[in-house]
Length: 437
Image 1 (cartoon, rainbow, N blue to C red):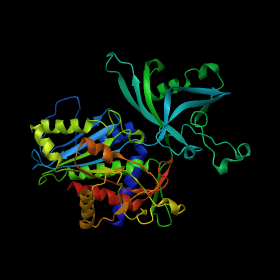
Image 2 (cartoon, rainbow, N blue to C red):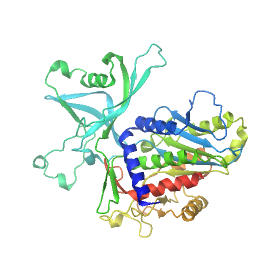
Image 3 (cartoon, rainbow, N blue to C red):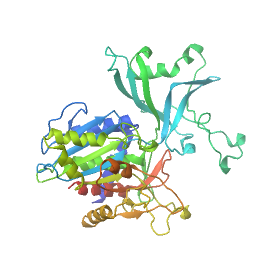
Image 4 (cartoon, rainbow, N blue to C red):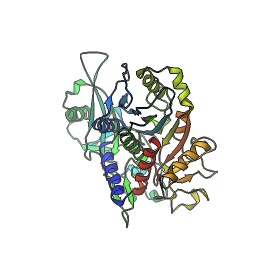
């Protein structure tokens, strides 16, 4: 891959991240990208009539998305190649009754979502995105509307060091009292009443009385950027896990253009709720992927029993970021297997199966990388550190196929702003694409 192509991959990633501010927006932007590339949208609740050579996208409950392309030579029992990632990230969620007013300062009541590094959210420009549910004539079909302010709207001010002399010694932040974003100065009593609902209604272009509920995320409104003496780094919010989502999207759209000789079904799954354990109807710890595959086989008039046969010929990449070696914390890395930014995606290994670890699957990914001159690394946590976990072992319990966990090495994982090497995005894009060939 040329330098120009690598730079384009970073530029495209940063553009995607600006639009994909919350899981609803990740799915909407992904769907629009795929439909623009010729993918046909399907509804999960309707029968499917599919064809070999076709490409399809399926939104699931607004925050999860599946997309797949069917090789023209694909037959019942043929191999499935799947790649999965997650749409959510650690952040703050707005509570249903959000207004908290203190001496004219209007704050929002929020809940911490996932394992956020709380102090990184202080003193930053923040905004809000998500979905609003509105009244309709059909009681069982309320109207839903996406909303994204797309501008700095609120912030969480730090306490001055003069009032908190111990702050540089490490101070624990209280999630309920010290993580409340400031949104306005409001002195009029009438304006204080239902302040946030009225603000939300204005943004949506509806009456406050029409709002039934909302699912809103506070996100870091800072744009991502390229930095470093050689422009080698990317600093941005939501690298975990939009880097992986974008690699999936790039790979499946490219694979959909070359299905003539393909005997394979290529599928991506972008799941919600990984950061809180995945155990939701739209998460990886559910049967939604099984239902999708059953509907694909039914839509091709194939027998379900042959789908079971295909599982044992198939393979899945579970894509999520990896812990890059931190140069200021040498002791936090394994002495032998350290992920260095800019040296390619990392295959993540854990013999306790916190990451899906199967030596044959690892061997396959290694050979794909070596055959296509894609740099790659291997990662393990220190033996005295639990580390994180991801989608691989969860999903493979429902879809029993060879599975390997891998992803781009990042620094400041779960911070409001994370850091990676730009070259690694191009390498991951290429790896997933070659896996789909």
